[in-house]
Image 1 (cartoon, rainbow, N blue to C red):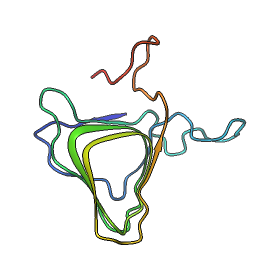
Image 2: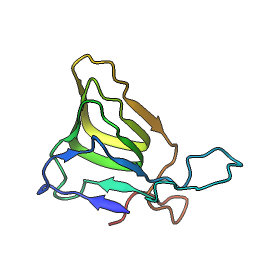
Image 3: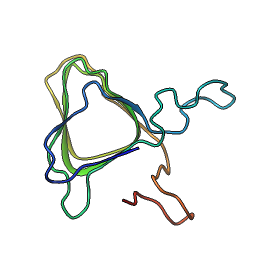
Image 4: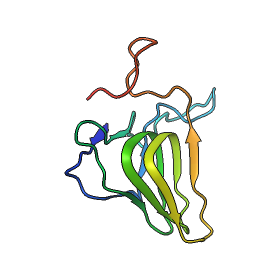
Length: 128
């Protein structure tokens, strides 16, 4: 699954987004559903000749839980200080701002060598 955004799209609010884009976030030997959210290989792409430049907003008391690749290199990320979004994988934004003190916890977990397409060892990235 991929969401492709460009310069004609408006702001993106992912306050309640729950999407799993990785094959498996479970420990080795785990027996059970491997992709419980059913959104295998999730990607948000906003680069290219007319990149997405509108913001990504996370509101207060967010339930955001996203894994996979989020590639919005020209888009600012703005989060409320009382939110606790969780991102696992690879998240690229132009800038990141947390507004207000709050007691939220912004969680970003990196997955090494995560790519959307990997045909050969030297290949990678998103092909659209």
